[in-house]
Length: 289
Image 1 (cartoon, rainbow, N blue to C red):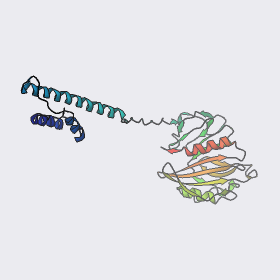
Image 2 (tube, rainbow, N blue to C red):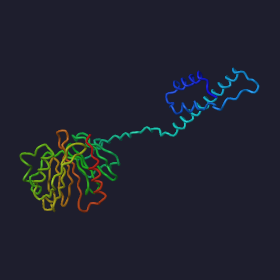
Image 3 (cartoon, rainbow, N blue to C red):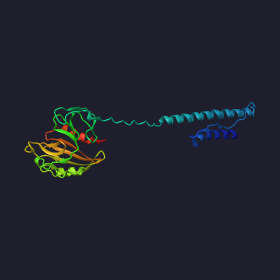
Image 4 (cartoon, helix red, strand yellow):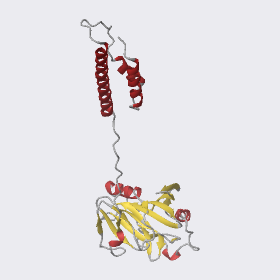
């Protein structure tokens, strides 16, 4: 038995236009689903018209069954496909301003810092943010230096805008460099390397939050005989950095938009290793806002 050619044309046209995703293989499957058994003459003389109507009914049932199969296949395929999950970009927590923690430039009054990110504020001229670890203190701050560290003060990180360097750490009477050192990070590092009695490593070119920087390590000898143990390294207005006996600094001098920032982390030979690790963590976390 064959399908009525006119009906086949209608069916093929509908299947071509009714869906955009139906492939030729699926369409051919639908067309092959019609009854193809050999036609037998009716025993009781059924009229040709009624027989043709029966063919149409068979064809419609087969088409409906094929369409149901197609819908079911599409549903299964859509369920099996992984759907993209929208990603959530975490919003960084705002830094806490240190300018709200008023205290003397240096003394016995310290501020306990939470394990949060803090940022230096006015009057310190360069916004510097850092992640404070547990058991970390704000030791002092001024317009030219911010000191942070542990309670015993045998480990910490200071942020400086130094103006000049001493000629001789053990001889304050010798005064400061004259003419003063230049404004760049390289000028500051070169001045440190010229300090008598201090061991300074070879400078290393690096960067801090995208800003060019130079790093060195400076270790002081036994300076107990130098100015009653107060050897002086660099100076900014009324504040100076004291090199106590056997102190070691990890120093980063950074050029920040025409200004010089010095990040100095310090430890001693007997510093608790956990405190020394906090110094490294703070220095590694620095961002320049």
